[in-house]
Length: 127
Image (cartoon, rainbow, N blue to C red; front, top):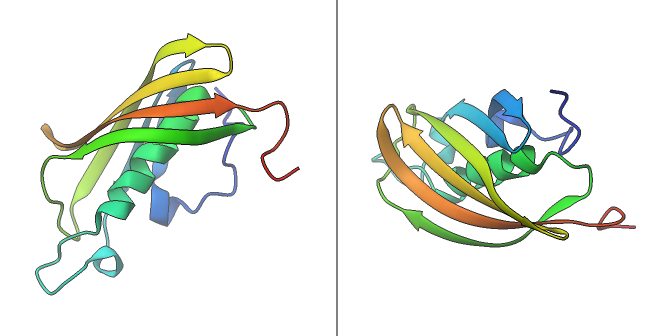
């Protein structure tokens, strides 16, 4: 399936799509030392959220999709250098609103879960 949303996103910051199908996606990336918050290598949660958000946008895959809100849980810490994978799936559609569930894993261990409220607008949000 062709990706028709978020086409200029920086894959180093938000991950690389490895699967995009109708209503679902999978995005992977390896965290870097630049994402660390301290000398222990703890990755800032914003990078994990960004990965999950990008996976949600790809699951909807519409040029005018925007995030309206998210209910998320950070379950385990991620260290710089670790690889993570976000899997997203549309769970419901109601008019312009699509709910997308996202799970981020490090191998088989869940490190993040979230429900993302995505909206498809009639025109680009900046128009």
